[in-house]
Length: 159
Image 1 (cartoon, rainbow, N blue to C red):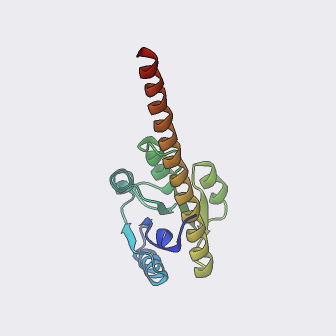
Image 2: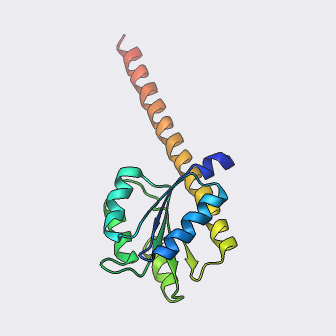
Image 3: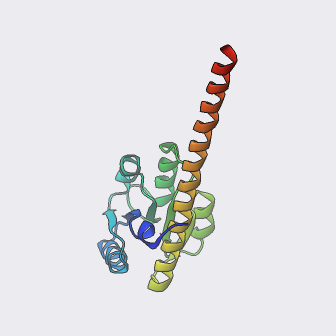
């Protein structure tokens, strides 16, 4: 099971074109004990940042100039080898929630923010994300063990 340390040490990217929202979320996360929080106000950077840092969670505003959150999710899907896109969208428009979930977001947070809800949704998402990563690692270890066993059996047969 994930420890509280694992959750608080997860890597998080905050993406919003409004400085006040970025500041609020960064402060909330910091005050809660999260230690690896980065942010950008430029949606064009998100896919590259995620490719480089493999964030455990991306908090993504939907309405931004230049590239909206839906387009960012499309870019993330194209450029990730990860099956699980760890995105919570931030939206003030109730009509966008279902569309965002269909586009690949795992959850949403409504604006204006209810801080208790924000903390709870982030914690829950990170719990799921970290479990998913552990499962993926176990799967790779099992695959490797089966491959090794097969190699050893083949070598034993040849002798």
